[in-house]
Amino acid sequence: MKVHLIKNKILLLAAFSVFLTVSIYSFSLINLNINAPKPNNLAVDSLNFKNKIVLVNFWSSWSKASRADNKNIVRLFQKYKSNSKIVFVSISLDTDQNSWKNAIEEDGLIWTNHICDFKKYDSPFVKKYEVATLPYYLILNNNQINFKSTSFKEIETQVEKMLN
Image (spheres, rainbow, N blue to C red):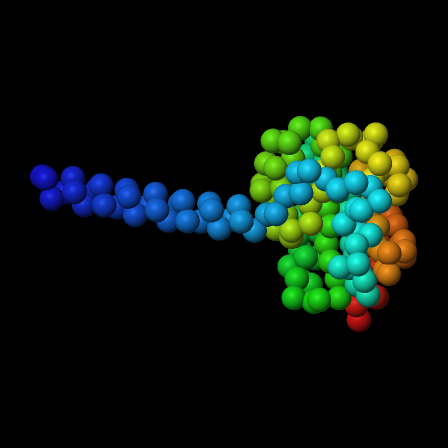
C-alpha cells in the first residue's frame, strides 16, 4: 500500500514538474511590451526593421473578428517564421492588461512584438495609422505604408507577392 502511494506521489510530482516547465517555456515565448514606447519611437518605425516587410495587425481581445482572424495570422507566422525578411507586430486596442495577455496566450500569438498602451481608439498608434475598425492590417516596407486592409485574405496575398 505504501509503495503504491509513493509511486502516485512521484507521478504527481513528475506531472507537476512537466506542467511547470511547459508553462514557463510557453510564457517565455511571449515578450510583452507592457509599457508601450512613445509613438515616435514605435517599434514598427525602428531601424531594426529596415529592409524588412513589417506586417502590423491591430486587434483586441474584445473584438470577435480580431480573435477569429488571429488563427490566420498564426498560420501565416508559422509559414514565414524562419524568413528574416518579414516581421510580425501586433498592436492591441485593449484597455485591460489581463484580457490582453490572456488573449495572446489563448490565441497562440508567439511572436515577440506585442504593443498595447491601453487607450483603445484614443491611442496615438491608432490615430497615426488611421485605424477605424478591427481587425486592421498594415504592411510596412522601409517604414512606409505599402498596403493596408481590413481583409486578412488581401494582406496574405500581398505578403505572398512581396516575399516570392
